[in-house]
Length: 114
Image 1 (cartoon, rainbow, N blue to C red):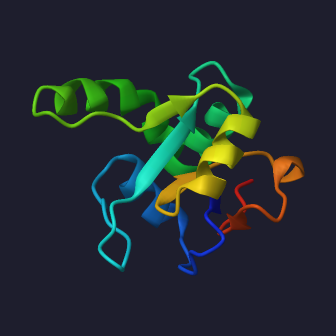
Image 2: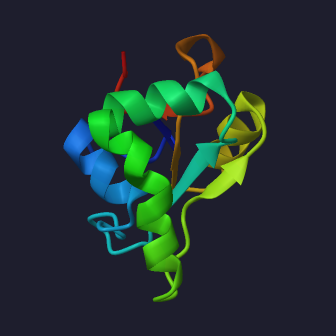
């Protein structure tokens, strides 16, 4: 899990679940959190969903279908690890996930998922 280098908050998997389900929508400084996903078919997204949501990952589509009707949209999807890293590096309120091998000094790791 990566954030902009200026972010100092520590996050748990429970925090990530709330952020990616948009139940927690603001950083401590009251700025909106901008979570980004990888595309549905990617291995990174499957690994993320299993690590953060466990058995509930299979129900995320239904969750977002319900939320859509009250005007809440799921996190944006980006097509590559490089795109996620570049977006997070330039957007101080963003959070995303990439493989550890993709991380460099342009972003800060807040949590390693297995």
